[in-house]
Structures are given as structure tokens and as C-alpha cells.
Length: 338
Image 1 (cartoon, rainbow, N blue to C red):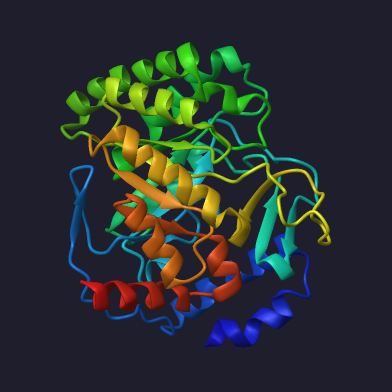
Image 2 (image 1 turned 90 degrees about the vertical axis):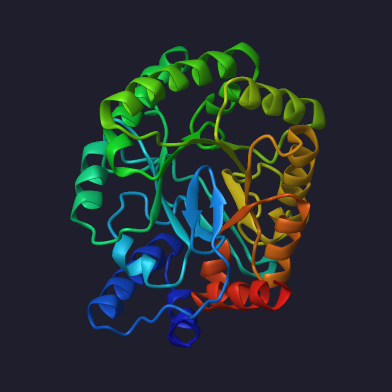
């Protein structure tokens, strides 16, 4: 209710300024005791060896530095994912870099992994009171050569491992040059094997195994999806997140900001991301779980992802257009179908 009143004012602001203002408002409301998670009787679900109180999660990108964990946790999510974080702080791409396409209920971003660095994120996680399931999404610095990308992922994995419930390997953002080539062939195989080797060492050191998930693009053909599925299984990755944002502009070409460069999310991504979830499920045959994300703006969108083969879902752009009520709406729908 509060968000529905604030949204018209927020939408008068530049999109990135509105994003920051919303998070500040959320922190204030949490500190004042004004936020109350929707009551849910959803059954707990075991995925990646973790027990999720409900299947609705927050996608990475909204809280890049883990600065708002406790406030976000009060909205009823079954899990949170923060980041993407890189080894060194970086400002990201020049502004403006975030655009609303209101008629299409979509967003285009070319943020470029703007964040304050992995050490800053870890300190924020240490200060948070949240004890639920926390995913930490890691990436590479923009100026790290692609052939040296593994070193950035390994460094981040080392630092976040003690604090994460699971770690997501982001190789699918369209806003870091050449990053998406890590989704293919030998480069993907080499990266995954390096990460699994490091995971085994960290598990021994810390006395617990933190699952690894890989986040992939919606702009893959069926052969590429099949290849990725095979490599994920072969390297015993614990989950796959489908999908990141798309480079497609189908259906939004004529809208204001529709020609901006960057990744498109929101309603225009719904069908494409669900199709990737479905194809992944066919190739994986239940050998590892899928987390479905992309264009979830209502309970029916969430159901479509789950019906296509996802075990969990995540939302982000839907929160911009619908506000926190979206979480409760999805949970109520899942309870009715249980």
C-alpha cells in the first residue's frame, strides 16, 4: 500500500535516483517497525541441500553491496541474493544507465557491475542481523582480461564463502565486455572446474560445502542451452539460474528509451526466460535444480516458471512496477495451489 502511494512520485525521478531513494525509504520503514512480512503457509522446500522457507527470492542487482539486507528480509522473501560484486570497487558505466519503459513494464540497464568491492560487501553481510538464506552473486572487474576472469571469480569466492548460503557465478551480464563468452565451450568448462576445485578446498577449510549456481543468458539457442546443461552436470554445479537480462528489443522498439543499450528486463522478458527454463529442464532431467527469474510481474508469471521446471523463483523488475505486495501475492497463490 505504501509503495502504491509513493510510486508516482518515484517515477518522476531519474530511475537510478528513484532506486536509491526507494532503498533509503525501505531502510527507514524497517527501522521504524513499519514493515511486516506477509504470513505464509508455503511448505518449506529443499534445494541445493538448503531448506528454503518459501520459493520466492530476491534477484541479484537490487542490493549490489548488501547494504539493505535486513530491510529486504522483512518483505517476506524465502531467500535473498545480493551483488553482483567484483574483487575491486568499480563505478560501472557512465550515467544515465538505468531506464524505465513504463508502457511495457520493462527496464533497460547498463549498470556495468557498479559496486564497492567484495570487502565492502562482506563487511555489510557481517553487520546484518539476517540469518536466512543468502546468495552472493560474484563477477569479474571490467578491466580484468577475459582470459584471466577465473582469478577474479576465485578471489571473490574465497572472500564470500564463509558468509554465503550459496554463491552465484554471473557469466551472463550483457554490460561487461566479452563476459558472455564465458558461457561457452572450453572457457566455461575451465572456469567451472577451477571453481569446483576451489569449492572443495574451501569446504574442507570451513567445514561446510557452499553450493555454486551459474546464472545464464536468455539469448541462447537450444544447442547452447544443451551444451551448458551438459557442462553444469559434468562439473557437478549445484544449480542454474535462468535468466539474466536480454539484448532483444522485440516489442519495445518504438517506446521511449527502447533503443538504449544494455539488458532488458521486465514483462518483455517473461516468455523468453520461461522458454529457457523449460529447455533447461528438458536437458537436465532433474539432475540439478533451476532458479527461474525474468519477467515475473504477477502470480501467474511465477506459476509459469515453476510449471516450466523451476524449483525456486526470483523477482526484481516486478518489484519496481508492483512493489513489495508482489511477494505476498505470489505466496498466496502458491498456498492455494498447494
